[in-house]
Amino acid sequence: MLSKASAETLQNENSERSEKSTVGIVGCERNGILHACLFAEAGFKVICADNDRALVERVSKGKVPFLKHEVEPILRRNLRNGRLTTATNLEEAAAQSSIVIVTTPAVVNEKGMVDYSNIEKALKRIGLSLRRDKIIIIVSVVGVGVTENILKEVLESVSGLKVGVDFYFAYSPAPFFKEQTLKSLEYCKRLVAAQDITSLEKASNVISFITKEPPLKTLNIKAAEAAVLFEAVCTNVGFALANEFALFCEKMGIDYFAVQSLLMSNTKIFAHPTLDCGGSHETSFILLEEAENSGVKLQVSRAALKSSEEALKHGITLVHEALKECGKTMRRAKIALLGVSQKQNMADTPKSSFRNFVKMLESKGARLSPYDPYLLRKTLADAGTTFLTKSLTEAVEGADCIVIFTGHDQFKRLNLKKLKLLAKMPAAIVDFEGVLDPEKVEAEGFIYRGLGRGVWKK
Picture 1 (tube, rainbow, N blue to C red):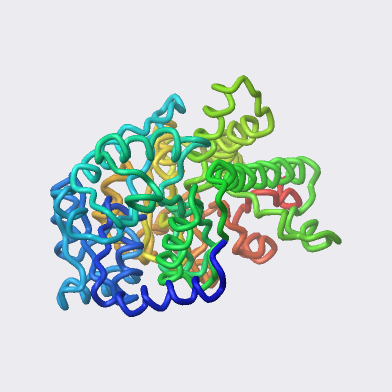
Picture 2: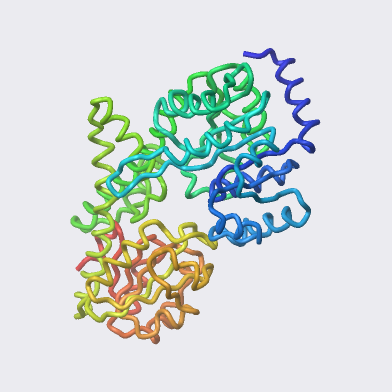
């Protein structure tokens, strides 16, 4: 490790150069834009580059489909003051940058196969313009050994330069990148891994500019890759276990949330049951493919992934049971979906499970009326539907069933008496987020269902 004095000197030198340093962000999707905003706010000049011209054009106008109220003001401000620019030529963007942050994600297809070709193509283009002393940091989540055996080799072979000698190369993934916000990314504990000490220190200093927590540094890149994958799978396992317990509680007439409040151990390990596990699914597939290629069977990890898929089907079952209790069928029933955004109280992209949930309900003949106070109609275009009601009243008027899909604060304060007048009684409320008091809901004449809320199952 560098001495404390050497590390401080290096950081001071970087601080003095920060106003002159240019950071090239490769990839203009969520992960890339969040990093771009953080670096621009830290005083760096930033170039956002992507092969997708439509994507670049949208960013150049200060528009994004996620976290609009949080990200767009920062994006537009830095576009106006010239701190942030966009480009479609990766070679030129990399050539103009002393630091290159690669956010291009691995692609996981419907069969769970992982494809790194997009990252490799981006690195080949970066390698064509690679010069000495540049810092390249991979922030995409990849499999064990991919950084050193594939990505590093691509850069060295194309550029003719050597890592740790001619340029600096590190791995610092953004965990759960599809769920990150500017604040969560700024405050998360980042791993930084490299094969040589100089790359490690330089990359760590770069990451330190955009994070409040000091990075966790290691010279073992494979261990860092495994740590990120393990964390994602542990999250999936936690959700799967919570969903399994919730189902047990429903069958036994117990309230999962009451049980959770009585646990004497660390209750943080007991997640709320959910239909949506966010972006950790793709990371799980990366680990499972690595294990399969190595002849290792990760039975718990695979079971957790399957359990997450079953949770969505269980959600449909709860809606069906609630309607049946009202003397109604799914066919032609109007179902109000309250909350679409994956983040509570934010204008974010729709939950990853939303598209499939909509398709499953529509296949059974239901008429859907989704509403989200933070989203516009056009936001749902990529989520499998193009409609979104303008108001809560429009969504629930004449509804046979009201489903709380995202627990925005507004839905915690629903006026049940008013809902009763608007809905087509007898009607049901299915609360997937656990934001309503079941007793109060049923006191107003609604049929209540919720994940793990077995005591209200009749």
